[in-house]
Structure formats: structure tokens, C-alpha cells
Length: 215
Image 1 (cartoon, rainbow, N blue to C red):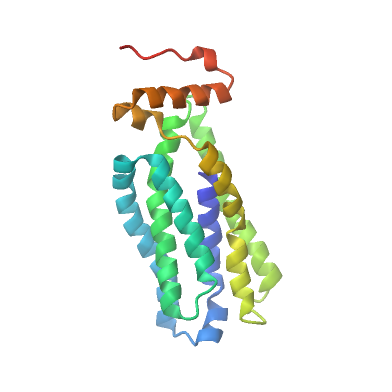
Image 2: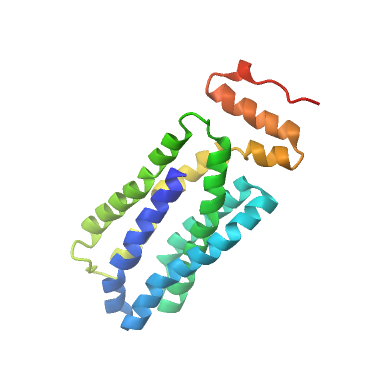
């Protein structure tokens, strides 16, 4: 969850910060600049409306992973855009992915966290948003200190490097992120649900405390 917030914090700052450079390179009008920024949030709205449905149908884990891949692909793809149309499309997919991934990720977090201390874990994960902003700020300070790239490649490298933390995080996420045990149990997949619970408790050193559900 923290890495999803990190991606959001990073992209929110970058989507507006590179506008000056894009205006100079592509001759963007104020209307097109507004469209580049607002399209992200239109995608977030639509993704948020659809994310819960797909998470209940397909499961929390696959939707979260798909959203993560969408964020990485759209962010990285933005760096290769040659005009405002392709950039608007990439920004929309980015917002759609983030909006679609947030509800199932929050649900997965709530359904997998312990009753005691779970709220503190959620609060800690929100630090990812601030870390994303800091990381984006450092990239801007290094490549575009006055928010104007010396070359057309400056903003492109910023967008490429912005996905680096999440590109690294997706590997352990794919390997270790478990499906919600509650989702599995409610959908009649009791053995899988118990396996996830055992995995979580073993990780926390409490494997002996898990009992089989009543027949």
C-alpha cells in the first residue's frame, strides 16, 4: 500500500511540474495544459468506481497487481510521448490504474491486518505519499531546477526515473502479496484462505495459534 501511495505522490507533483517544459517543446495552450493535469483525475474517478467491482469479482490481489503494472507502464510510456494526445492517453491510464487499485488495496489491507495495531500500520503506509513527493522533488531539483529542461530529454528522464522505486517493489509484491483470506473464505475457497492465514501467522511467529475452521 505504501508503494502505491509513493507512486501517487510522485506523479501528482510531476504531472504539473513538467508543464512548463512541455509548453515550450509542444507549444501547449492553457486549455491543453489543463487537460494534461485534469485527465489524471478523471481516470482516478473512473478507476475508483470500477475497482471495487473487479476486486469483488476477480479478487483483491490480481486487481492490485494489474493496477500496479498499469501505473508503471503509463508512467514509463509517458516519457516517450511525442505530442499532447499520447500524453493525455498515458495520463488517463495512469489515473485509471491508481483509482482502480486503491479500493482493493485498502480492502486487502483491512482484511489482512491484525485488529490490534492495524490502524497504525495504515497510517505508516501513508508516509509513502510524502516519500513520493520528496523523490519527485529531488528529480526535479537535479534535472529541472527552474522547471524548464535545458533539453527535451530532461523531463523524459524524470518520468523514467520516477518509476524506479515501484519497478523494484513490484517484484517482492508479486512474490509475497497474499490474497485476502476473507475474500477466499467468503467465496468458498476455505483451504486457500487457511493457507494464507497460516502464511501470515508464520511470518509473525504465531503459526501455532491457527486452528482449522469448523467443518
